[in-house]
Length: 301
Ligand code: PAJ
Image (cartoon, helix red, strand yellow):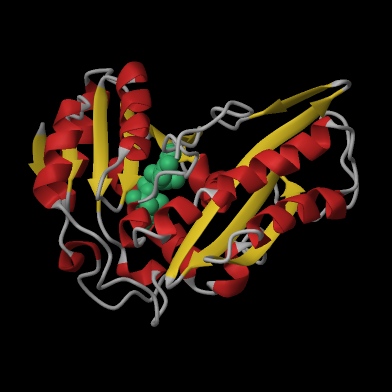
C-alpha cells in the first residue's frame, strides 16, 4: 500500500490504472477504522483492480458545536488496517490540500436532506456532498462504496452523482454490528462504560419495529411507536428521532405497501454522544425482507 497526500498524485495513480484497463474501487472515510470500514474495503478489493481509500476528517461537515476537534484519529493504526485489507492507495490529504482557499463553490442536495439528520444538522449534508463531489472528481470514474449505516448520506451521494452526471457507480453495503447489535461507529469510542451497553437498545428497537411489521402491522405510526417505546426503556438514551420513510427518496409515508423498500431510521444521544442506526425492509406478500444482521437470535451483552 502506498500513502498519498497530494491530489495530483492520486489523480495520476487512478488515471494510470484506467489507462491499463484496471477498474478502480473507492472508499471515502474519515478514519479511525473499525470492521464497518474494513467491510467496505473488502467489498472494493473483491471487485476491483485498484483499491483507493481516502482518509480525511472533513471539517465542513461538522457544525460549530459538533465534535470536529474531538473526532478520534489513529493514523498509524488506520494505515495498518487498510494495508491488511488489501488497499492499494491510502489518500490522506492535509486540510490545506483539500481546501487551499476559501470555497466559493458548494454542492447542495435538496429534499432528501430536509428530514432525519438534516433537520438537526442543517449544514452537515452540504459539507458531505461538497467533499464527496471533490473526491469523485479527483478519483475519476470508479465504483464507490458507502455504508448503509449512514443511510441518508448514501441517498444524498447517489442523488448528487446522478444529478451531476458523475461517472461513479455508488454501492451501498450492509451495516456491520458489534455482538450485542450496536452498529459499529468511530463515535462509539466516546461512550462511557455505562453508555456502551445501553446503546444496544437502538438495535433492539429496530428489531422490535421489524417484528411488528412481521406480525402484520402496516400503519407507519404504529411501527415507529414500537421502536420509540423500546428506546424509552433505556434511561441513558434519549431519542432524537425515529422515522419510517421510503428507502429511495426518504419520502414520508403513512401506510406500508408491497414491493416498496422502506427504512426505519433512529438517532439518539447517550450523554453528549449522538448515535444513528437504521434497518431497511420490504414487504413481499407474506414475506418480509430486511437487512438486520443477527435478527431474532439471542445476543451477547
Ligand atoms: P466515516 O464516518 O468514516 O464513514 C466512512 C464509510 O464507512 C461511510 O460510507 C459509512 O457509512 C461507513 N460505515 C461506518 N460505519 C459502518 C458500519 N458499522 N457498517 C458499514 N459501514 C459503515 O461517512 C463518512 O466517513 C464521511 O461522511 C465521508 C463520506 C467520508 C465524507 O467525509
